[in-house]
Length: 510
Image (cartoon, rainbow, N blue to C red):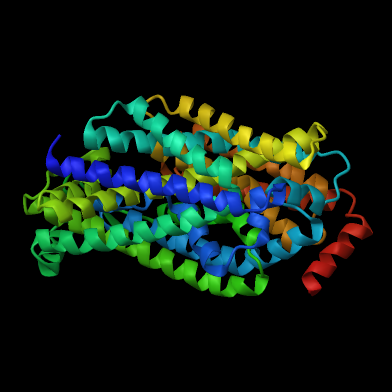
């Protein structure tokens, strides 16, 4: 190993040790109860709520996927995705956050499945069971995709065995998630978001310098047909421009709909200490999302300029996602201090991955230990036993996810895209109708959950492959189908009991 690689590895190892120690310390101070483990005792401040929600959302996609997409095809694809996500973030905080926090307190619900079930006064936990299964079906492979990203990062940087890197990443995440629960996860997400931000800033400044300045960067991308257009995209294979039509724009922006159904993001709203602080959280989260995604897209453009200047290789295909890694590696060649900074940048990529995986792991664990085991199967546990089962569930699910991540050729982006659609199309409509439509009932929401989940699979594997106008991201049609089904079935069946409507009125009148 070179001196630069030793410095980078040492920095990353120190970072991982810091994560473990900090997480364990926070865990020892947190409340030893199910609410403490899964919601941090509903004591999160506005800054932690905002940054934890966004860090758990973005994952390594922010530092690898988005810059790589911009590097290859220009502004349109990455830009419309970013716009959709920014709008989705803002609307989620504006429309959903306050209501679900207030409603979940009223119903004493600490997970998303328990909230939906209690909202409709279930006597037999059918919705609880279906919702928990949806979380397990989509979250376990989602966690696996994060572990796979960790494995690929260490393998490409140091030549480590891919499986060994996956195991190390799994152990680190388990260590602070199983001990500290939500409090540790949320606090580490805040720290990791700061590291991610620093990584974006440093890479931008260094990349511009290596490319020859802002003017040179702009001159290089202007020379590429369709690169700076929002209605065209650059085709790297042909060197020309390809149209980016309305259907594609709508399909791409549909990513923003996913926010309404993300369990690991929605629980952040339920965990804030005071609903009045959500306004500040919304401003912080929205500003961070817009700025960070804009910078990430710019890094893709800057990375192309650095390649054009001959400082890093020209990246093709999936290799474009390593543009930040390549620039960080270039930075490390300038001496000891730059190598340490490069290590922190790469730790930022690791942080982005871990901040998502830990949140998803906790949500999946709560779906099994809290909802399936106790609520559906009726297993009675003491408070101490509940905590033990919660921690064991985190470990078991992490091990299963690590097993699923053993294939180094698995497509991280495809798994993330599919899981995002699955949650958005099932929980998204269910949450919105539960919060805003008093006439929605148990039968309608149950039918909507099933219809949304089935349509994601049908559209992904049967309809979308036909191409053309059918090549629409499966989240959009599945979201529409689930919404229509909820409305139709609710209107065709008996309206909710007065007691359920009364709680709805009380929550909305407060």
